[in-house]
Length: 335
Image 1 (spheres, helix red, strand yellow):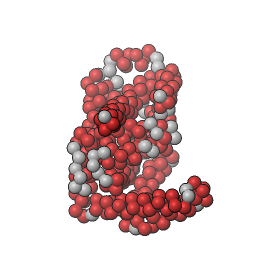
Image 2 (image 1 turned 45 degrees about the horizontal axis):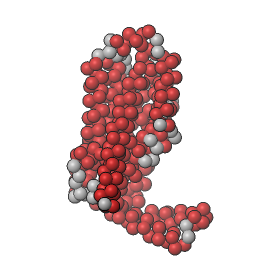
Image 3 (image 1 turned 135 degrees about the vertical axis):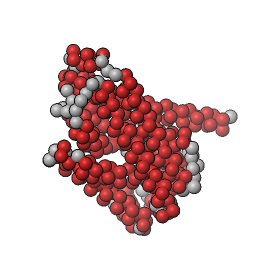
């Protein structure tokens, strides 16, 4: 409810300052075909995102169906959208994968591999945008953010690969964390040793599973995951241009793509769940000078509804069905 309220308040303010008679005229003339294509683009992005889990689970010889992969993606997205910094995304995906008979180490390896592939993709996209749209990329903060995203993605990947190769170093870091004063006060010696032992086992299992996943025999599968992630992001990036074309907009797609990429890079840094409020305001600022003022509020409303609330509702439906099934199982066990 908090997430919804933030978004509604932000949208109400944006519509108040941008809505006029020209907005109504544009709405009346909107081509519904483009709106349907935008909805289709969102569905295609779901399909490609689910395919990444399908390919990765098949690579580790624990294949799940495309339907189950879709549930993992949408269920994870739901909790990612309602938690600060998207912190609920990967744990939920790992949990849902474990419900499909993957071990905790395998489930975490799959979610970690997908996250790493996504970081490589963002680094690749950042470089491609700098190269392909160099003439339309403004100097200053935008370029710095783009370079920063590429650097962070590469550094994160190098750290991840290092700990895959050297799990003992990761274990040492975890043990040092548990030995700092606040943690040592919270955990008694016997409890801390038991917890550390479990974490050591999980790190070793995770490292072993990731080593297997990133071995040469799975290079084709990893390349395929990269391609389906490209397809997912291409579909998601196409939503805004389709909405604008439906409203009769004519402008520079290169500038639009650059600004959209900046927005997607900054969303994870927003402390509000799903970036609610911050995304609407930030997107409005990015659209100024690119989109006519009377269209901005309408465009932000439709785009946000399709790329965020549509997925949130679908993910909520998946989670509700999961909890309903778990409750039914518990009742059956009691009976």
